Image (cartoon, rainbow, N blue to C red; front, side):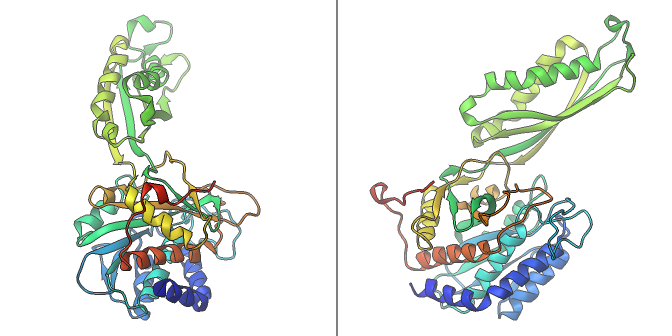
Length: 401
């Protein structure tokens, strides 16, 4: 219990400092790959607590705590913000026009900063790595860069938290297997000679072709892919035309394809290309498919998830709840392609007022969740240092809704 007790004592004397860190980050958000001031602030703060940081090329950094050698566990926080104009009315609202921490990354970063500073004052038997990752909010994400820069060297397992405004503060949502989905972007461009709407038989009707794609393609996909994989195509844009009596020469539709099954994600692109060709063949239009790969699903390892759940019960025997799978994407998945690990949901709703969702301009999080996150990760470190073993099926940690 020594590590847990030490972290509790550290939190008791640094709670105001943690809130100040989070509010500074929230007031000064930066977009993906542009987190220069954020990286400087994290580095400066950690160094003031006696830690040595290793900056990544560009933005982001990592810090190792404990023994210099040996197999270690890692924790990851994402540090970028979103292109959203804040509408919370908070005293520490974003000072950057059109940019906001609307996904809780300021909380994630503060949790890891606090954990690093607390662990710096504790004697550890096994090393710990803390990764402050840039660019989670862009399509490919910054995780592959961190991996290429050696972020996972000597790492045995990796953990992360994601703020969850649908959960009350103090609750930890865990899930074995897929907790997020893969998300790819599909754009289909079509072209024809154009013509008059009074003579559609004399041309290739671009608008009709686009409409056929929007109405038929999602249904056909559900007949090609097992629906139990949670594979869904939803279009978000459709563009064509300039006059009611003219068939345009070009047009396009775009949308996202999401799936909870990593095997489907790895093989779905050629399936989509074939279906698109089949749907458009009778229309006579020419077409181009722009398929942009996103991230795979976050597949939580069962042993790592059991460790997170076990650690959460040291905070509160009823802290653990079952996390539903999200259709959103998360580039933490790339780490899990290399080492086992788990991502949990960190409750951050105070229990009062409306529950505003992530990626909204009015998102407000309960800052008490910061201490919960640090305590949870600190308990994971303690269990790792104590030689934690996974529970048997008979004694596994119960989940409380």
